[in-house]
Length: 131
Image 1 (cartoon, one colour):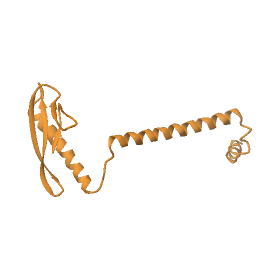
Image 2: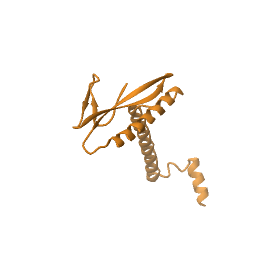
Image 3: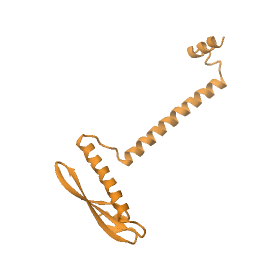
Image 4: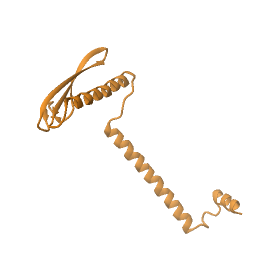
């Protein structure tokens, strides 16, 4: 499996292409997956001003992240996709907006006609507490 990393793009058909001018560099890291040790290939394009040491450090960090994902997969822990995370956040925000609108409407109704709610138990308790 080839992992696309820095300054490298991937087409829909799996074609790799450089996003900037530079030298192509491949890095190999061993990862364990499904009880087999496999090497993961990382593809980089070294742009002007980038060093191999920076590249190796980034690759090792990416390899650690992949290893953590493999370990989580083995334990049955699945991470939500970015699309799922966005949908959850939108649902939470919509729910919060709905609750805020209901609360505002209730406060406005109470402010406009406090006599309509005078017999409500909470209003009676509030009146008793005020005295």
